[in-house]
Image (cartoon, rainbow, N blue to C red):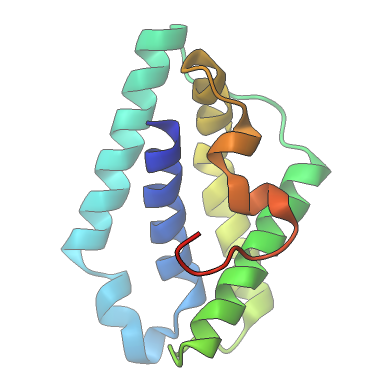
Amino acid sequence: MSRVLLIALDATALVRTALDQRELGWLQESAALTELERTSSLLLRTLNQNFLGHSGAPAESAQSRERWRLRYEHALQRLRTAGIPTRADPEAGAREYMELRANWEPDIEALAPALGFRIEQVDRAGFSGRPRAAGG
């Protein structure tokens, strides 16, 4: 469940921060994206409260922020390679992505061990140091 929530929340963060708003703003502002983000966040909070008795809030580290930045850069590269219009200012996008990620990553990191997983197993792309191959 922690991996599914990471994928859903990461996808919404990337759509909000990496795509070109002029061409894909309709998707960024869609009810479907908002609902995916809200329901995933609610489920994550609910699981943390029921498994751990609270929401997780470990300290954010420089290593985590670098991992998030690399994940954003890899996603941006993949989107561009696929011909998907991306944001004109990638630095601003990376900052916004890391801010969004800081809101839910601590809860993912707290939940994963409660379900028997290490964060490296849940966020494989974030720890590999390189983008994963398609389908992998």
